[in-house]
Image 1 (cartoon, helix red, strand yellow):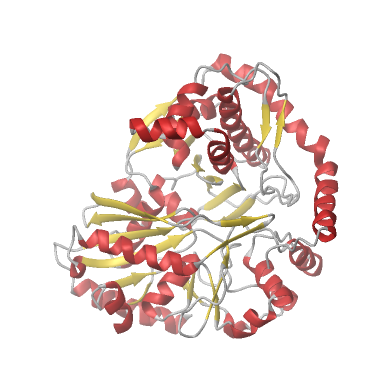
Image 2: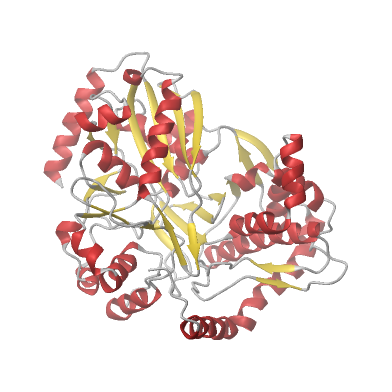
Length: 529
């Protein structure tokens, strides 16, 4: 990597010499539902925010796929929107982060060979188990190495034609620069979500050709500039610096200001991430949570990932809230605001209704591919509003479950910063504060992922001295939600019930998975390839 870093520093110096006061920084996040962008000036002021919606993810059973070409088209549309405010040659640097781990297979020319198996995809459970058995390490079905092995076992035609295995953000930077890279937070360091620098044991278990893996590159390094072909297709200037990004959680931490110990991030979107900044690694012998290096040097990110938290409320909206959707269209009010208004009249605990939000399996802290959703305690007096409130509470319970594991291992959480779609709901923020017994803060200038990307874009060309410098200058608190002691006492009882439900039905989830597979085989229904 040494030679690569020398080249990147030279590229950084060349870009720095060409900067002017009119230059801006563009941060991009390749999400699950949209591609988002944030523009900063060199003083850290947010000048422009935009997003481009993506087609719905193709979900069937335990599979979840997306077309990477849709991400590229949305990225170009986002640039067109940006050009409506800024000249293309005023964009001094771009950093791209995004969802993950989402496997992308590309040809040498950068064309996708297959739909991306995105982070929600759980089809590689057998491959994950095989790698775990061989290496002795906990490997989950959503990780890239398991997905690569699945591709090798089930779609050998695609595997054999693949030039490089990339992630979502790496696909866009490859299209721009022709450089196949993957972001790492430290030299010679392997984050759990990344492809490069696997240990020899893992490389043997997957038996992947190392030449097909992207080049590990430090976050914040300049990868290069747009190729002539990319510049022509996107309108970008050929001297625009493309700065290395990484999976969205690291960008999120910067954008939310979670850069000091005892401060945690709760990112509530389609899925959920809970991340605590901590001075040391916290290793869990039971592998319930993750301990990885933080984007800020000498700090660690202690985290738990939950699969389908916000997705459950969206599922409920899509299937049972047609009247509210119609009302939202007529009134111009967000449908989730309407649903939250209904739920706000429901008492704590949703009148005895408890939900397990495991609608596509679950990651932290139970790591069970077979887990499924449960709505427990339904009665004739329950209404739609009760179900909405119960879903909101279930998300708070799942975050508390992760928080308790972190505290068991020695972590301390004194403040939670709430971002993502869930953070726009005052009811949801207050519910989390009550359930977790910790102040919850909402922030200005969301979304935080592209904001963090823009900070990294500025750091890459030395506009900001450090990641902490960028975060301190830019992040601002909007509202603070303090825990309500009486609500907390009531929620303690419901949370105990929530925790007891999963062990009670765990074996039934396994039986259900087998029954579904047998039924599909009997009726000749083929799972998605």
